[in-house]
Every structure is written in structure tokens, then in C-alpha cells.
Amino acid sequence: MVSSRFFCLVFIREIISRYDEIYNESISYLTRIAILRSFSRLAGENRGLSKDILEEVVDHLLRGLNDKVVNVRLVAARGIEEAVGVLDKGIFNAKVLPVLEQIVKEDSDDDCKYFAQQAINAFSG
Image 1 (cartoon, rainbow, N blue to C red):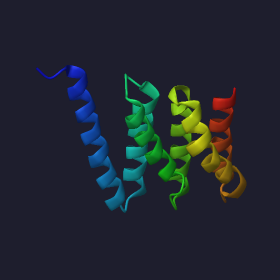
Image 2 (image 1 turned 90 degrees about the horizontal axis):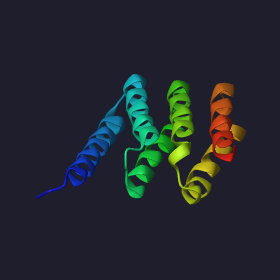
Image 3 (image 1 turned 45 degrees about the vertical axis):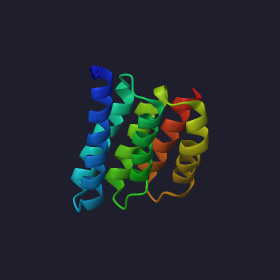
Image 4 (image 1 turned 180 degrees about the vertical axis):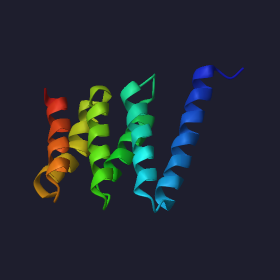
């Protein structure tokens, strides 16, 4: 008999995979925003997600920080801030912090810089 937890993890992996395809093929920034919001909710709620699934979700949010559209970058930064509470310190320091620091220093948009700094502060505070 397959456990419900196993089924949920398989289902979540399938959703992540499909969202990844949609994100990659999307020409609409609104679609990318919707996907990033879904990822941030998934990470923020963290209903027993395995470490590798959580890390995969965070990788998608980090990718959003490099989008050419400011609004997408804003949503990604805010999503990372939501996920900070469940992130392992090692993952944050190794993967997330360097990207956020780069955004704070180099992004052309002040709001993106602000929300990246907020995510850093949320983890530090």
C-alpha cells in the first residue's frame, strides 16, 4: 500500500516539473509571477516537504530573481522572504545569500533591492 505522504511528494514533484516547463516556455510575465507565487506558498507553508523538494522550490525562486521583468524579480524576492523561515542555514548561506546580496548591490530597480534586503534581514533577524 502506498502511503499518502509518498503520494503527496510524488504529486508535488510532478507539479514542480510541470510548472518548470510552463515557466520556461512562458512569454508572459504574469504567468511567471503566478508560478513563482505558487512556489513561494509551497515553501512558506512547508507541509512536510523534504529538504530536496524545498531546495528545488528555492532554486526556482532564485531563478526568478534574474528575470528581465522587474515585477517578476519582486515576486521572487518576496517569495524567498516567505520561505526563509523553513530554509536550512546551510542552504541559505550557500545558495540564497550570495544571490540576494548581488541583487542588493547590482539590480537596477530600488524595489528589487529593498525586497532582497528584506529577505536577508528576515533570515538574519
